[in-house]
Image (cartoon, rainbow, N blue to C red; front, side, top):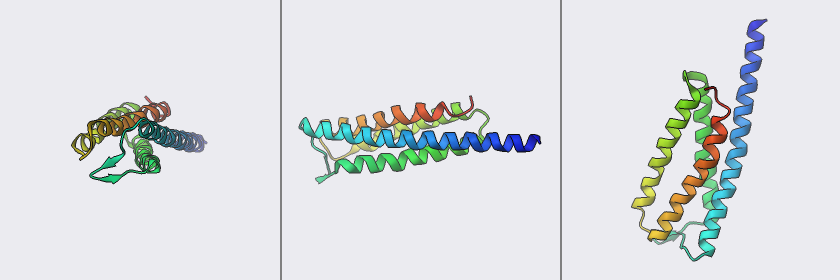
Length: 136
């Protein structure tokens, strides 16, 4: 009987974690597209190495990497002693590392700043939402 209750509770927690992660991913994707569109409307170029980044590209890449973050959260919830702490520390480090290619990109200063802003916006949405679903 105890095993059944524990299994049900764990399954529910995974479902809530994944559901929250999906919602946060959708919100972050929309937010990064809005930031990119606003920056572009304000006159900031979205060209890197001479190739334009479509506004929808921001949303797609945000969805891909946010989904990787949700998968990371699921794995940490299963294997880490302190899943929330491990997730926050890991994702903050990964967010900082994600800024490095933007700094090195063949783009103008305003474009680099806009790219970095989109990373920070996505992280500010996804990390806290997912972390709240993890055990301390």
